[in-house]
Length: 158
Image 1 (cartoon, one colour):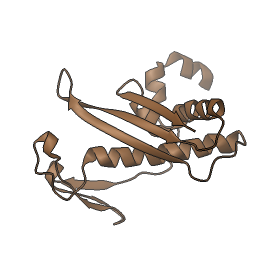
Image 2 (cartoon, one colour; image 1 turned 60 degrees about the vertical axis):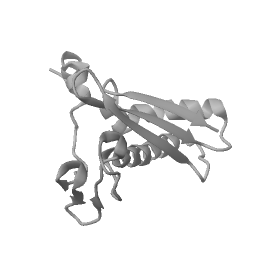
Image 3 (cartoon, one colour; image 1 turned 90 degrees about the vertical axis):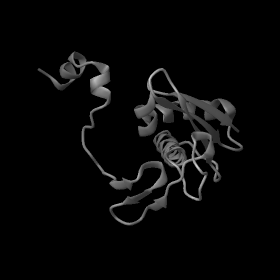
């Protein structure tokens, strides 16, 4: 059976979540939950964690998982934009940025998150910017991981 036939026979969900090759693996250890610490195995990341008051915490000096997710998703999405722009030979503005918001709240069973990404592509043609962002949303690993799992809103500003 051909590789293409195998892909057709597998469900799209199973296929989408399997990596063909692992190119990099990040490793971090967290202790004590939202009032603890998180550290990467290479020492490049070391953060104190604090629970926001809105979640019943003391709003201490540390960061929280939602902020870390917002930072990771926005940085990764810029990488996806650069990838698509490079592939299609599209010139990007120098000051591309993404303002990310990650919300947390109750769902039917437990808690869930949502994400809003405001993608800032100043000076770019609006139609081209929207097309670029939609293509980046298809290749971004965070978008692929969250698709169908959480509400993600993309807002393009030019």
